[in-house]
Amino acid sequence: LFLRQGEQALTESSAAEKGQRESRLTEAGAIVERIINRLHEANHRVTVDDYAILPNRVHLLIMIDTRRDLLEPLGLSLRAVVSALTRACSKRLGRRVWEQEIQSRLLKDEEELAAYRRSLRSAEKAGQNA
Image (cartoon, rainbow, N blue to C red; front, side, top):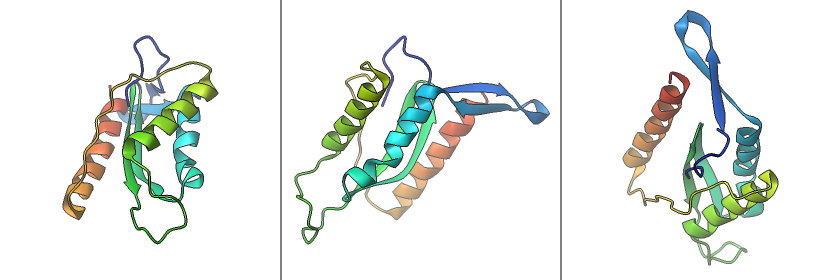
């Protein structure tokens, strides 16, 4: 998810030990993180496997349980989950903050999932040292 141009950053960096930069969430970033952490409470079919909050965007690894034996209705898509997330963030922040476009991809196996998890950590590290 990308922030609209001109929106307040979700993280800010500050100097840390040994010339490194340290990133911390802004107030807006903390609100986004709370909403991400509550996605599973809103729908038990949705699990946030991992995420990275960067200054101008959020990366999410979302898993949707498609088993038909659960009590909740199955009519759930990634777009619906992301839409609920962006609406909740915009409502809490008092304005629409996200770009309309999202990028999504269906991961084929555990190896690809592990690669995406590593890329999230790399994105966070790059954001901290920017």
